[in-house]
Length: 119
Length: 109
Image 1 (cartoon, rainbow over the protein chains, first blue to last red):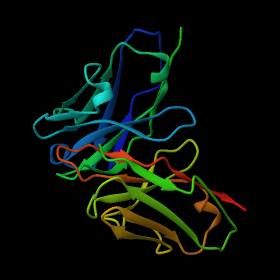
Image 2 (cartoon, helix red, strand yellow):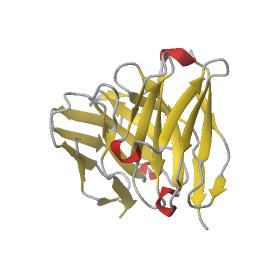
Image 3 (cartoon, rainbow over the protein chains, first blue to last red):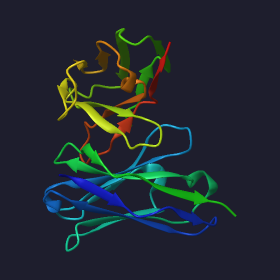
């Protein structure tokens, strides 16, 4: 069965960076993309960006351009999301999701990783 | 950027009743519209894609309709496990750029 298992919770200080991992199993990793979505406490879902696991092409949300980098390691079927220059309003649960083909439809989701930014 | 607007923000429904949730796109997304259910402390779960196709394992009481800019999610007879927040999402861009609505909370009346 398709599974996406994310790394554990993180606590970071403002200005620091965080790197969240997402290990995929149960499907051919390079046949899909990975989208990253975050959810601030009590708020809705915010799309952060997408990466093709086939060729590494990316598309980032404009508000995060310059602070976010998404990568994949096809040898371990793992996707990574790094967010730099963290601010308090980056405190959120970060989700990875498998993205289907050209549509980017997110069909299976990881369990989420809580990132807390606090001094 | 395509903006997705959901209404109402909160819907109070009694168990066994029908629930109708709406989602509007600021421009046409064709049928590239999905619905997700999210319960507290859990990741979103895909319910509907292609505006009207149920995802694997989703009960028949969930149905989606619409195309272009107006979409509806209907839950025909609410069960206790259906009380949750529902999000619509468009995926009509290339390269992929997903946009979510603000969500509708379905609560027990």
